[in-house]
Length: 430
Ligand code: HSE
Image (cartoon, rainbow, N blue to C red; front, top):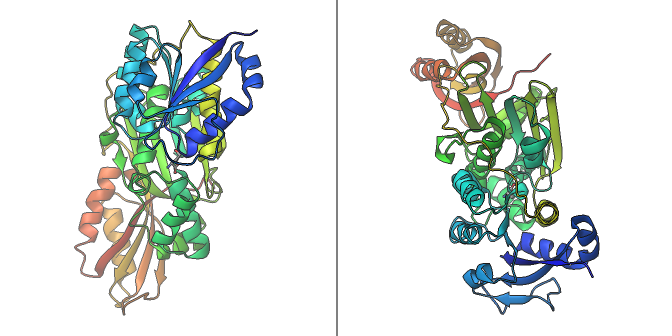
């Protein structure tokens, strides 16, 4: 009979249930692939009385997570409980006992990945976290192994399904923000507290992890230039649509070739129709990696939810079981140097509420160009809610700091009543 490895799981929510179903339902296939049979022995849950939609008759449910971690019959701890604590402490505890840990926890890995990887290395343990970024898309494996010969220059991505669902519904059906959040929650994509999704934290965590693996530096999540989608208005989704753009919550990272300094940002961004992220809608995620040898590698597909995330979790269990005794080395982790706003180039989309004098367009364009911000297109639009007409402007590439200073001056122009929207834009390649 083939040897077995004991699995203990922390959490039995949407992802945990899908992981349990696969471990129990396909134990034979997984065992053949791993060379040892992974057996789900214990699951720690908060509520022992709750009815579960997975058959756990041979699995012990417990409310004592620490005892599960300490149990000598548990070789691999699968953490799918989410949240930072107690998840981080339980992961540390397991690693200190030399156990393999498989986690889907992006907040913990983004905040403490290097410390936990160091802990794992010093105890001969393995730390696996494919499920922390992009559900079943193998982004961690791509950055950690497949591109091991490359110097990565940048990452452009959509890594939050909730906001992508919301922006798609808002743009296509004109649904309100609250209705769109409710749909993402109902479909099981939103975090327990969806403000992590809509304020860009979830995407920032995933970007920090990708940048850690891609560039070998660890940027604190707080250091990501982050804006969520709360201020995105239906009007701007419609206007950018008319101009050939689709608004996405884009997570972008870049590294300067000479200095090695990095920049990470998560911002609503107008993406042009000829860009690979343009058609990535609804619950799909996509990651574009630019590197020196492979050039451009794109992964896209379902980016979350129970089944897709379970795919990554259970795949990590199989890999960990197959390579037991030889865990992956800790990723390189240097202190980051951050690019300043004088060195990061962005293009923009602006919507201004202006005076009806007919002079606003010329005055605004002149002012922006005088301050170093090129204007590539300008469109007068009729009033929306009030009596004042609008002006849409597409600005070309200029340093973020130059853009920001020009916007401050724009706000003081007598013909400009209000800057109703200022959003990043990716320029069309055409
Ligand atoms: N809340 C996350 C999202 C779940 O919407 O992408 C998957 O990580």
